[in-house]
Length: 408
Image 1 (spheres, rainbow, N blue to C red):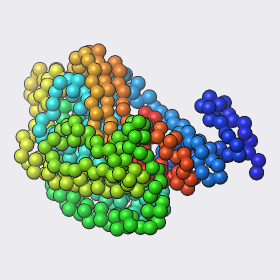
Image 2 (cartoon, rainbow, N blue to C red; image 1 turned 120 degrees about the horizontal axis):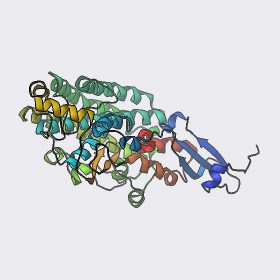
Image 3 (tube, rainbow, N blue to C red; image 1 turned 180 degrees about the horizontal axis):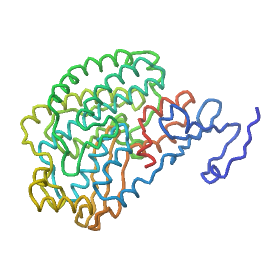
Image 4 (cartoon, rainbow, N blue to C red; image 1 turned 90 degrees about the horizontal axis):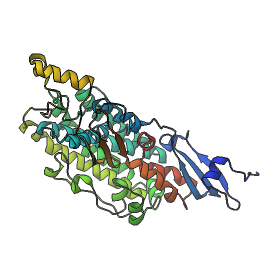
């Protein structure tokens, strides 16, 4: 077979040139294991990857520019569409950035509910990672079991906010609703079953010789490279660096909770798999601690800041000033003070933060989202070199990237 050496103008601009008797192929953007709209241009010497180029932008929607043309409250549901596997994490990261800009703090009960939703969302995201990663490598049963548990978690989210995927479960200044009657009982039942379910995943995978052959020493990334490329979350901790924003810069109630930060020094895909398993166990531990905190807190759900936050419905329906203020906030939007903030949070995939610059208008002058998947996608051009074509799918899966937050 004769392979032409002529490159398209696209590759010439990127200095992607073939050397010797190699072949250039496209992996994606339609490949089912690309985990979204990822196009990888791979140069192969036989079946070994010599050079890799991630090509992104197929899902670009101009989210950050949209934020600059929407009021602060209007933009919040749009954050669901970033990491759509962990929507509440995006809602919260944006909301807490705006709250810091406003100089307000959510009430205690709202913080309890938010932390519950964040950790439940973390379990949902990790189950999705485990299911799809296992399916990519060829383990069908784990996919079915993990999605079964994820459905129970999604039922809990639906009971609270009415949505299963794009939640919009957090508000600037607090949360919209208290937990429904019986919700904590259902959560307790879910948590009691999770250790047994996690053990099932481990029994199926951890010592499975095929699983270990496919993951061990595949997708190796040293601690130095992980730090140089801006890795965070499990990608960084999987390379032996113990860094979790919930511990380093505690927010909400994480400073009061007891939990461990799992770390692996294996630096490969197998180590990252073990890390995700351990993190689910820690999320279960956190949620157990939060249940009594909800009962002990006062039933206030939104911060009291009439200049920025609408009054409770009872006041709006009975007090003229509260109704007028609500009308202004809905039609014109809040006007935060001039300034700029950046608040990092620990999403299931790593550091998710929002930078906001305000000029005192109802619209952000500038908004920038720092998404972990963007950095982990760039790392592929280093991780894939030297690996074999059969391992490309494993490596992409182990990075746990989602392209809603990569392209934005």
